[in-house]
Image 1 (cartoon, rainbow, N blue to C red):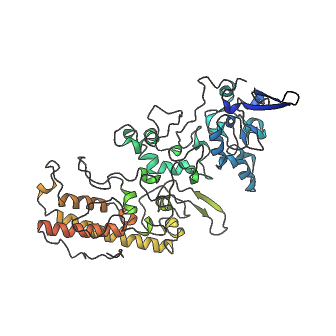
Image 2 (image 1 turned 135 degrees about the vertical axis):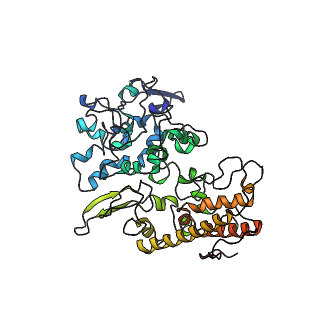
Image 3 (image 1 turned 180 degrees about the horizontal axis):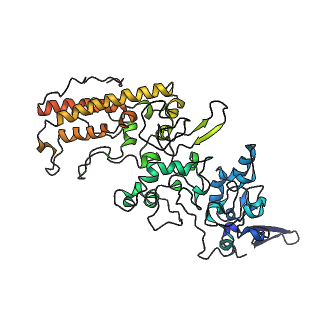
Length: 478
């Protein structure tokens, strides 16, 4: 079959000991194995398993490392997983086997056309498409590439299976900032923006040299395969980087959510931009007023501590089941891929995709807050959030009011100096995002109080209101 490469070759060493002469005759015989038996005509070029019992794909005979990683994924156990549910039916098999779903093929093929066990499980070809041509001539340029683009209703890529009421990953992703914010074409090629807003630039900046259908077009947003490695790997959920590491350069979410957490004097826009990771960890975030009493990294809220093992994802990947209160039957599965920590829900508890509902335990789901052990109930979580946001909002208003009394010259971006007023303004902008009060209310309160006191002292301005400038949240010992 013309299979190339040493990994595709089996070596047989036959040793014959010639007693009469005392010599050893070593004969090395190399042969191409029969990687697969004759394919069903209806398979349309899908080759499937070499050994279904061992779950050895034909592709895996050469791509040994990928085969090994894939074996540890849910895709490699997709068929058994379906059978184990007790609800297996033919209508489910398309997404638990290898055929026309997930790739560019549109007609029945592979398992869908043959029901041959060699196509069970979600193998390489489920994403890459039929491999017969490539296996027949692997030295050619016919490498089957997988698509990474996803969309609701798509007939190719991850979304062809990972959508619908059963697993609405794509629908929820579409409602997220990953799906419509970072997905905006404008930012995919801009220097300084593209590494987090463009899927192709993100993968390149992470040192991932994979080939895929859209590569070179800059058309890829932050889709499934930007965060998840389709081939598998050492991290939970096939993620390219871990979730629970308190390091902005190694934590998957924080690799992007760490930009402009401290003032950057080289930029015309000195306001914070996506500083959530450093704020959560209390490290390298905000402007520290003179005499600020706490070292970086010492003021950390519960959300950024070991109590929240998955850090960002502990709140923002909020997967839960919605059941009928009368029967207990399944109504809806939320995958958490809207990345909204407290999504708005309808009367049944199903996420609506809106962000404009009231911040109450009835209008939103606080499931992640209570399920993680941080809060005793959804209501207590809602109350804690309301108190924290109200407190930080009051301090931001006070800081902005005293800053309004400072001479305009103290805010000049061209005078080659960075003033206390500019630093305090940065902290006010940091606190003005309501999520800052949730990510780290302790540090945010301390920074704002210190900023207000510094502005009052430095510029001899009076307090704007009677807001209390004593910490109301418990802080580490000084």
